[in-house]
Image 1 (cartoon, rainbow, N blue to C red):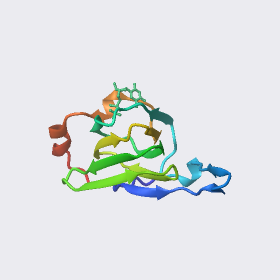
Image 2: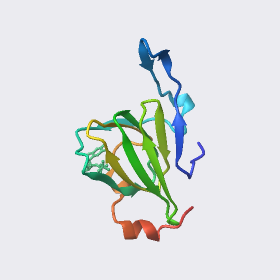
Image 3: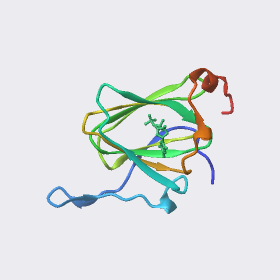
Amino acid sequence: MKKDNKPYLINFNKIGNADLGYITKAENSKLPFQIKRVYWTYFTPDDVIRGHHAHKQLEQIIVASSGTIKLNVENTFGDKLEFVLDSPDKALYIPCIHWRTIEFSNNAVLLCLASEEYDESDYIRDYNEFKKINNF
Ligand code: TYD
């Protein structure tokens, strides 16, 4: 499967209406990668900035299933993009080799669909090491 090399927003379909509420789904056949792991983070204080890493291979689709999440994403050329996830039908695709920082409103739940199982050796946690990579 082709690897995308830019982050982009995905607008998932909503089933339902304002009177009854909504369902939104993610299906492998409609995603840029096959999901191997799902995780979620929650109860993050609103003064904490998480992330501060990139991944060598991992691709992710991130949803704010509740609350608001702000993500800053940077490629190895120093191009920076800011995204705000403020609706459960909105998602952000993050390719590999992108440094990210993440801020949360205090009720936020971040749902992550990931292309790989957890592997600490896939992380780049040193920003200077990240900036030395030049493969895009
Ligand atoms: P990390 O991905 O660095 O979180 P964040 O970017 O939100 O700050 O993960 C935090 C810790 O949790 C780190 O020690 C690795 C561990 N972890 C797992 O063991 N399994 C997982 O699937 C994830 C996402 C993290």
